Length: 376
Image (cartoon, rainbow, N blue to C red; front, side, top):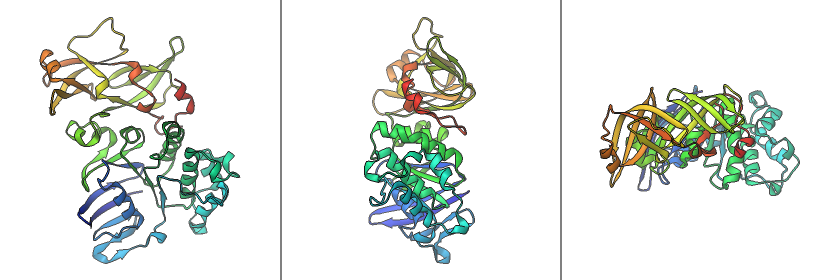
């Protein structure tokens, strides 16, 4: 279902000017704190009435300032998941979930209670009280409550921000499963590159209230000119790969992509599963000749496609490996010593141990990665 947002609104000295569309899947609003991410989702939810613009979901218009249309938030049928779960402490998990269902008219209830419970893995929690749940469990219940209202769209405003790393790893596979099984638009607010590259189908990059770029996550997040906004420390490339085989002797999994063959610590996923792999620029080494007798198991042949100089001694180099990009961050000294220029043949080396759990997105359009992967 298509979500279209075109709004212009002033909040004090801050001007929000956003224009984007998405045709389903999970769209991530990404940018630094204060870039306007939460203001956009609050406008979609109806908590902010924009001065100018239009918002629609499918054939339903929520806002059209030219025609003086403004559907109040309680009639928009929008699910909203906040940073904190905001469960009712005096209701059990089952009662919290049924409270969400109460908001959907019987004739428009699309979500089945048992199916939502199974999707989020909360069947064993139904008779428990919120006070006895972990942070990750609370957020799964909050997502379930939002889904059972049969919303036209689901808004998630940094739902993992208040969780520690262990709880984040607990809930991420369920959000992946939701992304792959839901037909409604999901708008996900985050300033975490790891979350965005793992979860998003589409990225809306924001800076100072304006949309800087919109597109597939693999396109936007590896644009060298956007690294100052996407975050240089964690920036890199996104690789789409397929699980080809498991090496039981050495505990490795082999993946195949256009760039070449990848080896990483064994994944408990079936052969044939499609994986999204994030390769950080800081983990890539470049060589002019094919290396031998090196410990790095991932060696990709390619040509230099783009070089972008920043302030100081660091340079970002985009390498085209058979139509797939790998980004390397090297020094200007290395750039000159290797005589690198667009069109130069190179080899990109990536250590297996650099490709950790946080670099992976679960099987795309299939069952999500299980918890066993944490042990790989």
